[in-house]
Each structure stands twice: as structure tokens, then as C-alpha cells.
Length: 201
Ligand SMILES: [Zn+2]
Image 1: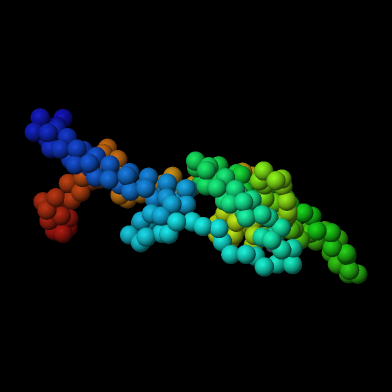
Image 2: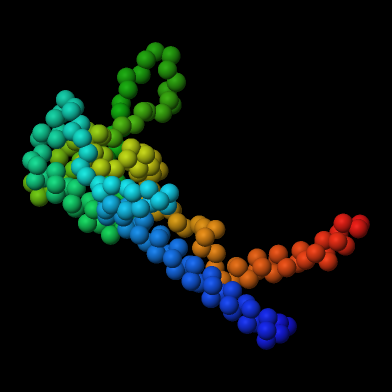
């Protein structure tokens, strides 16, 4: 059983940790919101991340940017950042991707069970309707990365919806008060006395 003075010490440790937790939580919220809303923010590396804007014209044969009115492009961008969470954004984007089974002409000697190569069709939607765009326009319009789309398309092939896994692991900075106490107890078990005994062996 812990004596009352020990309890007092433990409580002050919890209090201290909680105060630290608050600023960690604030920082995490700031970064998360900045990312989801495409706002200018300071990231974990203390660097300023600029406000998101519509990416460059894809300049492809389909002339995706040209086919869309400027207002449509803005609407697509605004609708995307109006979503409240990264999950919602990802589900929204994933719903605009279609898997196309590419039928390849089988050449003589080909294995009959060779998997077909897959391709995707990308669409954007706004008040003037839904239309197909190239992959580059699909990611440049909301200004998202290739990696993010690749993740969504891989999940689509698996028949899975995107789920945000970021921040689900307990980070070192956000150790709970209880865990702190356990760690401190553990450290206390390595008191000099014990270490000396260990060394004498
Ligand atoms: Zn294009």
C-alpha cells in the first residue's frame, strides 16, 4: 500500500502529465484541422504548411481543366475541404473512382489464369454534373497527393473503404497518466541498491 505522501507525489505527477497532454492535444488538433481543411498551419516539424489551392492544369489530351468551368473547379475544391474529417474526404474520393477490368488479348502460350491488369476511371462531381477526368486532374483539383489516391485505389480493389489509421497509436508524447505511473514504478525498480546487488553477482 502506498503511504499518503506517495499518493501526493503520484497525483502531482498525473497533474503535470495532464498539463503536458493538453498542449500535445492542442497541437494535434491544430495539425489535423489544418490538414483536413487545407488551411495554413504549422506542422510537427514546426514548418509552415501553406494553404491548399487547386493544383496545376493536367494538360492532358482530354483537356480536363478546360472542360470544367472555373466555377466548377472551385466548387470541387471547396466541397472537398468542406468535409469534416479525412475519412469523409477519402470516402468521397473513393466513390468517384471506378475499377475497369482491362481485357487483354490473350497471346499464344499465355497462362490462361494470368491476372488481368486493372485500370481506374476517375470522376469529379459538381453542380453542373459528373464527368470523367484523368488521374492527374483528379488529384490536382482538390490538391491531394498521388500516394493518397494510390491508397484509396488499392483499398478499392480489396473492396474496402478507407479508414484513417493515423494517430490511432499512442504516441510517446501522449502517454496516459496511468501509463506514466507504471513507467515510473518500473524505473524505481532499478534503484541503485538493486543495481549494486545485480553487479555483485
Ligand atoms: Zn486531364
